[in-house]
Length: 364
Figure (cartoon, rainbow, N blue to C red):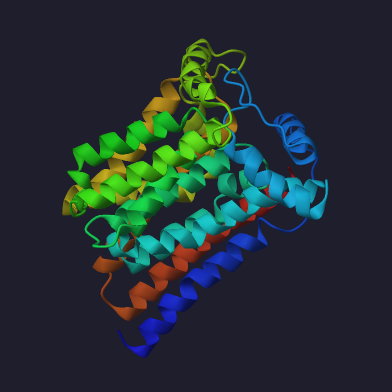
């Protein structure tokens, strides 16, 4: 690696991090709390003031949000800024986290995915909301990074990260099972996404990390082991609500319409990525394509739909858009045309940034 490439490797994720932070962290109290944020705040305050938290399988989802959000509330006081700080930080970190996938997406593909995650209107808006979905998206991306870097590695650390991400997903929201099912299906279809087979001890360490986190979260660090059955009860309860609609029934086109309105650049890039995958037979691209199609199909087919669920679709589509970007830039060989292509990408991302800024600060 020459000196220029070394500087780029260091500089790109920092630029993406700054961009993501600029549209997520300022004036977190610019708009009133959503009803769900108010409900979550009740549990967070009880945890901070009384040290009490009980998981309710019928309502309010998993404990990760409450435990993490209690920290800034305890340190900074009871303010809207403190309440929303954790999701804003997680949303900010997602953008440069994609850079760690450059080994499978390519440098330009990983940079594109990080850029799109940084300026995605949906990601920006719901990073400024303390509801469960941005936590789910962050840990999903962390799982993918852990698998991409951990498979084939002699050290188990990244597989432990992947296992920890699975445990955190299961501790965040019941719909984690849909995410894990879609990712598992995609791994099977793509023959492990073209990744090397992980070592047995790394897989064991990952499973141990996942189980340990789930047990600690739901049993309240072992104080109530019977509560470990509650997530299973939650699956039955929320499964019934998902099929019935429970006041949130929407047509199957609901999420596609959100993507077409707010995520045009991500959607167009994902189409390019899918086409490139078909042409190149890239197994990681097949993995992302299958994951994207599976998660879009699952969430579209469920009657119960709320707008923030779209984050589960945006994430794999943004990663697939990175595949498309890498493929396009590979075909553009002359420096002039490549510069024009990169400029066009920045202009398109700028359009998403304008939309994200309006949603976050003006027309919220």
